[in-house]
Length: 256
Ligand code: NAD
Ligand code: 0WE
Image (cartoon, rainbow, N blue to C red):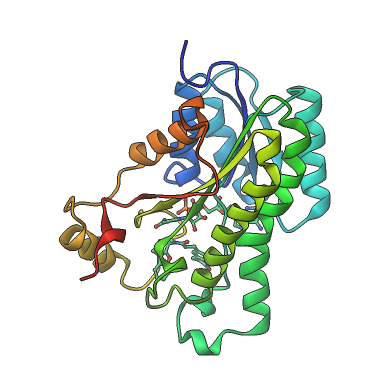
């Protein structure tokens, strides 16, 4: 028996094979979970179809823009019909308008603030509310965060504030859902070369900075995020909720 045998899960945030969501989905699948996937829009449908197809069988695949309540309602209605229950949910979704990640935080517009928080933080609350009625046996909700939530990372700007909201939401959700045996945790990942990181000015230098300064003197690998995602999803983590687990080669402990 594998760690996640008999568990049903849903994954939000696969865009391509480099997505953190795909690394964790593969690990969950290898551990025996049966998974459903959502994709942001038609643009990404083919990618996700092809990736999910590598699991064989008919994987449940649904469009979902996490800023649309109707999309979210439809997703959980379908999961209810096809799976009947749910144990795992991965939130690996973030967005802020590009201009908000370039200049000064001081210049963040009301609209950029709203969008970043809607997509990157509020969505966790909406997805947890949709999933909870299906998590009748027990549940594990995992969300991806980043160090810019707690310390200033130049140019991460409003995304840092949105991640702080995501991490605080994780704690309040953990409190509300704890009595139902539903756990809610974040993985704080070191920088990864994904679509969301591509084109960020100085990203290559950031990878080098982590290599130089993290205790383990290297960057995180996708499989290592998968392994932590599997642990948090498993009954081995049954007493862990409301936490932020750092998978960053130790970078977060450093003061200088
Ligand atoms: P990615 O681009 O592969 O994933 C981001 C996903 O967000 C995409 O699948 C995109 O479709 C989805 N998304 C954006 N807006 C959406 C919307 N309105 N509705 C539905 N989906 C939407 O990049 P990634 O690096 O894998 O990012 C995944 C998560 O990991 C994000 O929360 C990100 O903040 C976090 N993270 C990334 C890094 C990194 O360095 N790449 C480090 C720590 C945390
Ligand atoms: O969470 C993220 C990135 C999320 C993200 C990326 C983009 C790029 C394209 C959110 N919104 C957008 N909007 C776009 O238009 N990371 C943790 C990766 C990341 O992004 C940074 C980083 C790191 C690390 C931006 C500036 C500084 C550091």
